[in-house]
Length: 472
Image 1 (tube, rainbow, N blue to C red):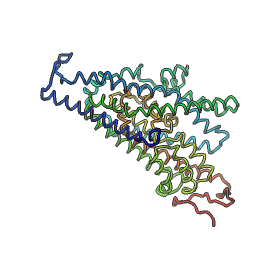
Image 2: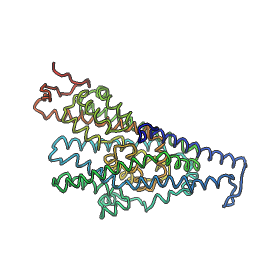
Image 3: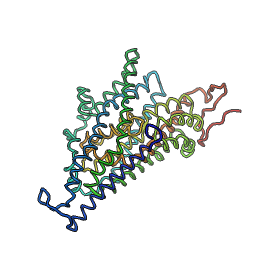
Protein backbone atom coordinates (compact mmCIF):
# COMPACT_ATOMS: atom_id res chain seq x y z
CA UNK A 1 0.00 0.00 0.00
CA UNK A 2 1.34 3.43 -0.88
CA UNK A 3 0.45 6.87 0.30
CA UNK A 4 -2.68 8.56 -0.92
CA UNK A 5 -0.94 10.33 -3.81
CA UNK A 6 0.39 7.00 -5.08
CA UNK A 7 4.00 8.21 -4.99
CA UNK A 8 4.86 8.02 -1.31
CA UNK A 9 6.65 5.34 0.63
CA UNK A 10 4.74 2.08 1.01
CA UNK A 11 2.95 1.73 4.34
CA UNK A 12 4.62 -1.59 5.18
CA UNK A 13 8.00 0.08 4.60
CA UNK A 14 7.05 2.84 7.03
CA UNK A 15 5.97 0.22 9.55
CA UNK A 16 9.29 -1.59 9.16
CA UNK A 17 11.15 1.68 9.73
CA UNK A 18 9.02 2.39 12.80
CA UNK A 19 9.73 -1.11 14.05
CA UNK A 20 13.48 -0.63 13.56
CA UNK A 21 13.54 2.81 15.22
CA UNK A 22 11.52 1.69 18.23
CA UNK A 23 13.47 -1.55 18.67
CA UNK A 24 16.93 -0.01 18.25
CA UNK A 25 16.18 2.94 20.54
CA UNK A 26 14.58 0.75 23.20
CA UNK A 27 17.34 -1.87 23.09
CA UNK A 28 20.01 0.82 23.27
CA UNK A 29 18.43 2.30 26.40
CA UNK A 30 18.04 -1.14 27.95
CA UNK A 31 21.64 -2.20 27.22
CA UNK A 32 23.02 1.15 28.38
CA UNK A 33 21.06 0.89 31.62
CA UNK A 34 22.29 -2.67 32.24
CA UNK A 35 25.89 -1.60 31.54
CA UNK A 36 25.63 1.36 33.93
CA UNK A 37 24.25 -0.80 36.75
CA UNK A 38 26.80 -3.57 36.20
CA UNK A 39 29.73 -1.14 36.22
CA UNK A 40 28.30 1.25 38.82
CA UNK A 41 28.48 4.19 36.42
CA UNK A 42 26.25 7.30 36.33
CA UNK A 43 24.19 5.98 39.24
CA UNK A 44 21.84 8.02 41.38
CA UNK A 45 19.43 7.05 44.14
CA UNK A 46 15.90 6.35 42.92
CA UNK A 47 12.63 6.91 44.74
CA UNK A 48 12.73 3.42 46.23
CA UNK A 49 16.26 3.89 47.55
CA UNK A 50 17.90 1.74 44.86
CA UNK A 51 20.76 2.92 42.66
CA UNK A 52 19.62 3.60 39.10
CA UNK A 53 21.29 5.20 36.04
CA UNK A 54 21.02 8.99 36.01
CA UNK A 55 19.16 8.98 32.68
CA UNK A 56 16.51 6.48 33.77
CA UNK A 57 14.05 9.05 35.25
CA UNK A 58 14.22 10.94 31.97
CA UNK A 59 13.53 7.76 29.99
CA UNK A 60 10.60 6.84 32.26
CA UNK A 61 9.19 10.33 31.77
CA UNK A 62 9.45 9.89 28.01
CA UNK A 63 7.65 6.55 28.20
CA UNK A 64 4.89 7.71 30.54
CA UNK A 65 4.22 11.04 28.82
CA UNK A 66 4.78 10.19 25.16
CA UNK A 67 5.31 6.63 23.93
CA UNK A 68 2.67 4.94 26.11
CA UNK A 69 -0.06 7.49 25.33
CA UNK A 70 0.66 7.23 21.59
CA UNK A 71 0.48 3.44 21.75
CA UNK A 72 -2.67 3.49 23.86
CA UNK A 73 -4.37 5.86 21.43
CA UNK A 74 -3.68 3.44 18.58
CA UNK A 75 -5.04 0.50 20.57
CA UNK A 76 -8.16 2.43 21.55
CA UNK A 77 -8.80 3.27 17.90
CA UNK A 78 -8.59 -0.43 17.07
CA UNK A 79 -10.99 -1.37 19.87
CA UNK A 80 -13.39 1.32 18.67
CA UNK A 81 -13.79 -0.48 15.34
CA UNK A 82 -14.25 -4.03 16.65
CA UNK A 83 -18.03 -4.09 17.06
CA UNK A 84 -19.11 -2.32 13.83
CA UNK A 85 -16.59 -4.28 11.76
CA UNK A 86 -17.42 -7.74 13.11
CA UNK A 87 -21.18 -7.08 13.13
CA UNK A 88 -21.32 -5.84 9.53
CA UNK A 89 -18.76 -8.29 8.09
CA UNK A 90 -20.43 -11.40 9.51
CA UNK A 91 -23.91 -10.33 8.43
CA UNK A 92 -22.73 -9.59 4.89
CA UNK A 93 -20.76 -12.85 4.76
CA UNK A 94 -23.85 -14.89 5.64
CA UNK A 95 -26.10 -12.90 3.32
CA UNK A 96 -23.69 -13.43 0.43
CA UNK A 97 -23.90 -17.16 1.02
CA UNK A 98 -27.66 -16.76 0.78
CA UNK A 99 -30.46 -19.10 1.80
CA UNK A 100 -28.97 -22.62 1.94
CA UNK A 101 -32.33 -24.03 0.83
CA UNK A 102 -32.17 -21.98 -2.35
CA UNK A 103 -28.49 -22.58 -3.00
CA UNK A 104 -28.83 -26.33 -2.55
CA UNK A 105 -25.80 -28.58 -2.68
CA UNK A 106 -23.28 -25.94 -3.75
CA UNK A 107 -24.03 -23.60 -0.88
CA UNK A 108 -24.03 -26.39 1.69
CA UNK A 109 -20.73 -27.82 0.48
CA UNK A 110 -19.12 -24.39 0.53
CA UNK A 111 -20.32 -23.76 4.08
CA UNK A 112 -18.97 -27.11 5.26
CA UNK A 113 -15.66 -26.44 3.52
CA UNK A 114 -15.24 -22.97 5.03
CA UNK A 115 -15.97 -23.97 8.61
CA UNK A 116 -14.18 -27.33 8.38
CA UNK A 117 -10.90 -26.14 6.88
CA UNK A 118 -10.84 -23.00 9.03
CA UNK A 119 -11.26 -25.12 12.16
CA UNK A 120 -8.41 -27.39 11.06
CA UNK A 121 -6.22 -24.35 10.34
CA UNK A 122 -6.75 -22.83 13.79
CA UNK A 123 -6.12 -26.19 15.47
CA UNK A 124 -2.83 -26.51 13.58
CA UNK A 125 -1.84 -23.01 14.65
CA UNK A 126 -2.65 -23.63 18.29
CA UNK A 127 -0.92 -27.03 18.27
CA UNK A 128 2.23 -25.64 16.64
CA UNK A 129 2.36 -22.79 19.16
CA UNK A 130 2.01 -25.25 22.03
CA UNK A 131 4.71 -27.47 20.53
CA UNK A 132 7.33 -24.78 19.86
CA UNK A 133 6.42 -22.46 22.77
CA UNK A 134 7.65 -19.29 21.00
CA UNK A 135 6.55 -17.04 23.88
CA UNK A 136 8.14 -19.08 26.68
CA UNK A 137 11.58 -18.60 28.17
CA UNK A 138 11.67 -14.86 28.79
CA UNK A 139 12.70 -13.58 32.23
CA UNK A 140 9.44 -13.54 34.20
CA UNK A 141 10.73 -11.08 36.81
CA UNK A 142 11.66 -8.62 34.08
CA UNK A 143 8.36 -9.17 32.35
CA UNK A 144 6.33 -8.58 35.53
CA UNK A 145 8.29 -5.41 36.25
CA UNK A 146 7.64 -4.15 32.73
CA UNK A 147 3.93 -4.85 32.98
CA UNK A 148 3.65 -3.24 36.41
CA UNK A 149 5.23 -0.08 35.04
CA UNK A 150 3.11 -0.04 31.90
CA UNK A 151 -0.50 0.94 31.40
CA UNK A 152 -1.55 -2.57 30.45
CA UNK A 153 -3.98 -2.58 33.32
CA UNK A 154 -5.77 0.34 31.70
CA UNK A 155 -6.25 -1.59 28.49
CA UNK A 156 -7.14 -4.92 30.03
CA UNK A 157 -10.19 -4.54 32.19
CA UNK A 158 -12.76 -6.83 33.65
CA UNK A 159 -12.69 -10.16 35.46
CA UNK A 160 -11.31 -13.03 33.38
CA UNK A 161 -11.97 -16.07 35.52
CA UNK A 162 -11.98 -19.48 33.83
CA UNK A 163 -15.44 -20.61 32.76
CA UNK A 164 -16.93 -24.06 32.31
CA UNK A 165 -18.25 -25.56 29.08
CA UNK A 166 -21.92 -24.96 29.95
CA UNK A 167 -21.22 -21.36 30.93
CA UNK A 168 -19.21 -20.85 27.76
CA UNK A 169 -22.12 -22.07 25.62
CA UNK A 170 -24.59 -19.90 27.51
CA UNK A 171 -22.34 -16.83 27.22
CA UNK A 172 -22.34 -17.22 23.43
CA UNK A 173 -25.98 -16.06 23.43
CA UNK A 174 -26.14 -12.56 24.94
CA UNK A 175 -29.06 -11.43 27.09
CA UNK A 176 -28.55 -7.95 25.68
CA UNK A 177 -26.54 -7.62 22.45
CA UNK A 178 -26.02 -3.91 23.08
CA UNK A 179 -24.53 -4.64 26.49
CA UNK A 180 -22.36 -7.38 24.95
CA UNK A 181 -21.07 -4.87 22.41
CA UNK A 182 -20.43 -2.28 25.13
CA UNK A 183 -18.45 -4.84 27.14
CA UNK A 184 -16.56 -6.00 23.99
CA UNK A 185 -17.89 -9.52 24.51
CA UNK A 186 -16.74 -10.52 21.05
CA UNK A 187 -17.98 -14.10 20.96
CA UNK A 188 -21.51 -12.97 21.96
CA UNK A 189 -21.42 -10.24 19.31
CA UNK A 190 -20.32 -12.81 16.72
CA UNK A 191 -23.11 -15.21 17.65
CA UNK A 192 -25.73 -12.46 17.48
CA UNK A 193 -24.36 -11.26 14.13
CA UNK A 194 -24.49 -14.76 12.65
CA UNK A 195 -28.10 -15.26 13.74
CA UNK A 196 -29.00 -11.83 12.40
CA UNK A 197 -27.30 -12.60 9.09
CA UNK A 198 -29.08 -15.96 8.72
CA UNK A 199 -32.44 -14.28 9.30
CA UNK A 200 -31.57 -11.51 6.84
CA UNK A 201 -30.66 -14.15 4.22
CA UNK A 202 -33.94 -16.03 4.71
CA UNK A 203 -36.30 -13.03 4.85
CA UNK A 204 -36.55 -11.49 1.41
CA UNK A 205 -38.40 -8.19 1.75
CA UNK A 206 -37.84 -4.54 0.79
CA UNK A 207 -37.09 -3.71 4.42
CA UNK A 208 -34.50 -6.50 4.68
CA UNK A 209 -32.82 -5.41 1.47
CA UNK A 210 -32.66 -1.84 2.79
CA UNK A 211 -31.17 -3.11 6.04
CA UNK A 212 -28.51 -5.15 4.21
CA UNK A 213 -27.67 -2.08 2.14
CA UNK A 214 -27.25 -0.07 5.34
CA UNK A 215 -25.01 -2.79 6.82
CA UNK A 216 -22.92 -2.64 3.64
CA UNK A 217 -22.52 1.06 4.30
CA UNK A 218 -21.38 0.38 7.88
CA UNK A 219 -18.88 -2.15 6.55
CA UNK A 220 -17.52 0.28 3.94
CA UNK A 221 -17.17 3.01 6.56
CA UNK A 222 -15.40 0.59 8.91
CA UNK A 223 -12.92 -0.29 6.16
CA UNK A 224 -12.16 3.38 5.56
CA UNK A 225 -11.66 3.99 9.29
CA UNK A 226 -9.35 0.97 9.48
CA UNK A 227 -7.38 2.39 6.58
CA UNK A 228 -6.96 5.68 8.43
CA UNK A 229 -6.02 3.98 11.70
CA UNK A 230 -3.49 1.68 10.03
CA UNK A 231 -1.78 4.73 8.54
CA UNK A 232 -0.93 5.69 12.13
CA UNK A 233 0.60 2.26 12.73
CA UNK A 234 4.25 3.20 11.95
CA UNK A 235 4.25 5.77 14.77
CA UNK A 236 2.37 3.45 17.13
CA UNK A 237 4.77 0.60 16.36
CA UNK A 238 7.79 2.79 17.16
CA UNK A 239 6.21 4.05 20.40
CA UNK A 240 4.91 0.70 21.67
CA UNK A 241 8.05 -1.20 20.73
CA UNK A 242 10.28 1.40 22.38
CA UNK A 243 8.26 1.01 25.58
CA UNK A 244 8.52 -2.79 25.56
CA UNK A 245 12.15 -3.17 24.49
CA UNK A 246 13.42 -0.42 26.82
CA UNK A 247 12.00 -2.38 29.73
CA UNK A 248 12.46 -5.98 28.54
CA UNK A 249 15.60 -5.91 26.41
CA UNK A 250 16.98 -8.22 23.75
CA UNK A 251 15.11 -11.29 24.98
CA UNK A 252 11.91 -9.87 23.56
CA UNK A 253 13.38 -9.74 20.03
CA UNK A 254 14.48 -13.38 20.30
CA UNK A 255 10.92 -14.37 21.19
CA UNK A 256 9.66 -12.45 18.16
CA UNK A 257 11.90 -14.49 15.85
CA UNK A 258 10.45 -17.69 17.29
CA UNK A 259 6.94 -16.31 16.70
CA UNK A 260 7.66 -15.68 13.01
CA UNK A 261 9.09 -19.18 12.63
CA UNK A 262 6.09 -20.76 14.39
CA UNK A 263 3.53 -18.88 12.28
CA UNK A 264 5.37 -19.65 9.03
CA UNK A 265 5.68 -23.36 9.85
CA UNK A 266 1.99 -23.62 10.80
CA UNK A 267 0.92 -21.87 7.59
CA UNK A 268 3.20 -24.12 5.53
CA UNK A 269 1.87 -27.26 7.21
CA UNK A 270 -1.72 -26.29 6.48
CA UNK A 271 -0.95 -25.26 2.88
CA UNK A 272 1.08 -28.29 1.83
CA UNK A 273 -0.18 -30.90 4.28
CA UNK A 274 -3.90 -30.30 4.68
CA UNK A 275 -4.55 -28.94 1.20
CA UNK A 276 -2.43 -31.66 -0.39
CA UNK A 277 -4.30 -34.35 1.50
CA UNK A 278 -7.70 -32.90 0.58
CA UNK A 279 -6.74 -32.69 -3.08
CA UNK A 280 -5.57 -36.30 -3.14
CA UNK A 281 -8.45 -37.78 -1.16
CA UNK A 282 -11.44 -35.69 -2.24
CA UNK A 283 -10.52 -34.43 -5.70
CA UNK A 284 -8.50 -37.53 -6.67
CA UNK A 285 -5.90 -35.35 -8.35
CA UNK A 286 -2.18 -34.78 -8.02
CA UNK A 287 -1.56 -32.17 -5.27
CA UNK A 288 1.58 -30.92 -7.03
CA UNK A 289 -0.31 -30.68 -10.31
CA UNK A 290 -3.13 -28.64 -8.79
CA UNK A 291 -0.79 -26.32 -6.90
CA UNK A 292 1.30 -25.89 -10.03
CA UNK A 293 -1.80 -24.94 -11.98
CA UNK A 294 -2.82 -22.50 -9.26
CA UNK A 295 0.51 -20.66 -9.38
CA UNK A 296 -0.79 -17.47 -11.06
CA UNK A 297 -3.32 -16.88 -8.30
CA UNK A 298 -0.90 -17.87 -5.53
CA UNK A 299 1.83 -15.53 -6.80
CA UNK A 300 -0.66 -12.68 -7.13
CA UNK A 301 -1.85 -13.28 -3.56
CA UNK A 302 1.72 -13.35 -2.23
CA UNK A 303 2.66 -10.11 -3.97
CA UNK A 304 -0.52 -8.11 -3.23
CA UNK A 305 -1.43 -9.51 0.23
CA UNK A 306 -5.08 -8.98 -0.74
CA UNK A 307 -7.70 -11.65 -1.43
CA UNK A 308 -9.96 -9.08 -3.05
CA UNK A 309 -7.25 -7.88 -5.44
CA UNK A 310 -6.46 -11.49 -6.36
CA UNK A 311 -10.08 -12.41 -7.18
CA UNK A 312 -9.93 -11.80 -10.97
CA UNK A 313 -6.80 -13.95 -11.23
CA UNK A 314 -8.38 -16.60 -8.99
CA UNK A 315 -11.45 -16.89 -11.23
CA UNK A 316 -9.37 -17.17 -14.40
CA UNK A 317 -6.95 -19.68 -12.84
CA UNK A 318 -9.71 -21.91 -11.47
CA UNK A 319 -11.52 -22.09 -14.81
CA UNK A 320 -8.65 -22.22 -17.28
CA UNK A 321 -5.80 -23.88 -15.38
CA UNK A 322 -7.70 -26.18 -13.03
CA UNK A 323 -10.70 -27.04 -15.22
CA UNK A 324 -13.33 -26.06 -12.63
CA UNK A 325 -16.89 -25.53 -13.99
CA UNK A 326 -17.57 -21.84 -14.39
CA UNK A 327 -20.58 -21.75 -12.07
CA UNK A 328 -18.58 -23.47 -9.31
CA UNK A 329 -15.50 -21.30 -9.80
CA UNK A 330 -17.48 -18.08 -9.70
CA UNK A 331 -19.45 -19.04 -6.62
CA UNK A 332 -16.64 -20.59 -4.57
CA UNK A 333 -13.87 -18.11 -5.44
CA UNK A 334 -16.04 -15.01 -5.08
CA UNK A 335 -17.44 -16.14 -1.75
CA UNK A 336 -14.06 -17.45 -0.64
CA UNK A 337 -12.43 -14.05 -1.13
CA UNK A 338 -14.78 -12.79 1.59
CA UNK A 339 -15.24 -15.59 4.12
CA UNK A 340 -12.75 -18.42 3.40
CA UNK A 341 -9.67 -17.13 5.25
CA UNK A 342 -7.88 -20.18 6.67
CA UNK A 343 -4.54 -18.39 6.86
CA UNK A 344 -5.98 -15.37 8.68
CA UNK A 345 -7.75 -17.52 11.28
CA UNK A 346 -4.60 -19.61 11.83
CA UNK A 347 -2.52 -16.45 12.25
CA UNK A 348 -4.97 -15.03 14.79
CA UNK A 349 -4.76 -18.22 16.87
CA UNK A 350 -0.94 -18.29 16.80
CA UNK A 351 -0.75 -14.61 17.71
CA UNK A 352 -3.11 -14.83 20.67
CA UNK A 353 -1.45 -17.93 22.11
CA UNK A 354 2.05 -16.52 21.55
CA UNK A 355 1.23 -13.32 23.42
CA UNK A 356 -0.43 -15.32 26.19
CA UNK A 357 2.80 -17.33 26.57
CA UNK A 358 4.92 -14.19 26.38
CA UNK A 359 3.00 -12.37 29.11
CA UNK A 360 2.55 -15.45 31.28
CA UNK A 361 -1.25 -15.67 30.96
CA UNK A 362 -2.39 -19.23 31.69
CA UNK A 363 -5.29 -20.34 29.49
CA UNK A 364 -7.53 -23.25 30.41
CA UNK A 365 -8.70 -25.80 27.87
CA UNK A 366 -12.14 -24.21 27.81
CA UNK A 367 -10.64 -20.78 27.19
CA UNK A 368 -8.60 -22.18 24.31
CA UNK A 369 -11.77 -23.69 22.87
CA UNK A 370 -13.30 -20.23 23.08
CA UNK A 371 -10.27 -18.82 21.26
CA UNK A 372 -10.75 -21.51 18.59
CA UNK A 373 -14.35 -20.43 18.02
CA UNK A 374 -13.47 -16.73 18.05
CA UNK A 375 -10.63 -17.22 15.54
CA UNK A 376 -12.93 -19.17 13.20
CA UNK A 377 -15.50 -16.38 13.34
CA UNK A 378 -12.74 -13.78 13.16
CA UNK A 379 -11.31 -15.39 10.02
CA UNK A 380 -14.73 -15.28 8.40
CA UNK A 381 -15.44 -11.72 9.54
CA UNK A 382 -11.99 -10.15 9.11
CA UNK A 383 -11.80 -7.36 6.56
CA UNK A 384 -9.88 -8.17 3.38
CA UNK A 385 -7.62 -5.12 3.78
CA UNK A 386 -4.16 -4.72 5.34
CA UNK A 387 -4.59 -4.82 9.11
CA UNK A 388 -8.19 -6.00 8.87
CA UNK A 389 -7.64 -8.74 11.46
CA UNK A 390 -6.01 -6.44 14.03
CA UNK A 391 -9.27 -5.32 15.71
CA UNK A 392 -10.29 -8.97 16.11
CA UNK A 393 -6.91 -9.94 17.58
CA UNK A 394 -6.94 -6.95 19.93
CA UNK A 395 -10.42 -7.79 21.18
CA UNK A 396 -9.54 -11.45 21.78
CA UNK A 397 -6.48 -10.37 23.77
CA UNK A 398 -8.56 -8.13 26.00
CA UNK A 399 -11.19 -10.85 26.47
CA UNK A 400 -8.62 -13.18 28.03
CA UNK A 401 -6.62 -10.62 29.97
CA UNK A 402 -3.59 -10.58 27.64
CA UNK A 403 -1.89 -7.15 27.41
CA UNK A 404 -2.76 -5.66 24.04
CA UNK A 405 0.56 -3.77 23.85
CA UNK A 406 2.02 -6.95 22.41
CA UNK A 407 0.37 -6.07 19.10
CA UNK A 408 3.34 -3.74 18.49
CA UNK A 409 5.60 -6.78 18.18
CA UNK A 410 3.31 -8.37 15.61
CA UNK A 411 2.98 -5.25 13.45
CA UNK A 412 6.72 -5.08 12.98
CA UNK A 413 6.82 -8.43 11.15
CA UNK A 414 3.25 -8.48 9.88
CA UNK A 415 4.03 -7.70 6.25
CA UNK A 416 5.84 -10.97 5.53
CA UNK A 417 3.31 -13.04 7.46
CA UNK A 418 0.47 -11.19 5.73
CA UNK A 419 1.88 -12.28 2.36
CA UNK A 420 2.10 -15.87 3.61
CA UNK A 421 -1.40 -16.04 5.10
CA UNK A 422 -2.99 -14.40 2.04
CA UNK A 423 -1.35 -17.09 -0.09
CA UNK A 424 -2.88 -19.74 2.19
CA UNK A 425 -6.27 -18.01 1.92
CA UNK A 426 -6.22 -18.04 -1.89
CA UNK A 427 -4.83 -21.57 -1.92
CA UNK A 428 -7.87 -22.59 0.09
CA UNK A 429 -10.16 -21.03 -2.53
CA UNK A 430 -8.36 -22.89 -5.33
CA UNK A 431 -8.51 -26.24 -3.56
CA UNK A 432 -12.14 -25.68 -2.57
CA UNK A 433 -13.13 -24.97 -6.16
CA UNK A 434 -11.38 -28.15 -7.36
CA UNK A 435 -12.89 -30.39 -4.67
CA UNK A 436 -16.39 -28.94 -4.88
CA UNK A 437 -16.21 -28.90 -8.67
CA UNK A 438 -15.50 -32.63 -8.73
CA UNK A 439 -18.32 -33.41 -6.31
CA UNK A 440 -20.73 -31.32 -8.37
CA UNK A 441 -19.68 -33.10 -11.57
CA UNK A 442 -20.70 -36.39 -9.96
CA UNK A 443 -24.29 -35.12 -9.83
CA UNK A 444 -24.41 -33.98 -13.44
CA UNK A 445 -25.87 -36.18 -16.16
CA UNK A 446 -22.61 -35.89 -18.11
CA UNK A 447 -19.31 -34.03 -17.96
CA UNK A 448 -19.96 -31.71 -20.88
CA UNK A 449 -21.43 -28.24 -20.59
CA UNK A 450 -22.18 -25.73 -23.30
CA UNK A 451 -19.94 -22.66 -23.08
CA UNK A 452 -20.90 -19.11 -23.79
CA UNK A 453 -19.28 -19.32 -27.22
CA UNK A 454 -21.36 -22.34 -28.24
CA UNK A 455 -18.45 -24.76 -27.92
CA UNK A 456 -18.34 -27.67 -25.53
CA UNK A 457 -15.91 -27.58 -22.60
CA UNK A 458 -14.76 -30.69 -20.80
CA UNK A 459 -15.25 -30.50 -17.05
CA UNK A 460 -14.20 -33.96 -15.95
CA UNK A 461 -11.29 -34.03 -13.55
CA UNK A 462 -7.79 -34.51 -14.94
CA UNK A 463 -5.35 -36.44 -12.85
CA UNK A 464 -2.31 -34.46 -13.97
CA UNK A 465 -3.61 -31.10 -12.78
CA UNK A 466 -3.26 -29.51 -16.23
CA UNK A 467 -5.94 -27.38 -17.83
CA UNK A 468 -8.45 -29.30 -19.97
CA UNK A 469 -8.08 -28.84 -23.71
CA UNK A 470 -10.86 -27.19 -25.67
CA UNK A 471 -12.12 -29.25 -28.62
CA UNK A 472 -10.74 -28.04 -31.97
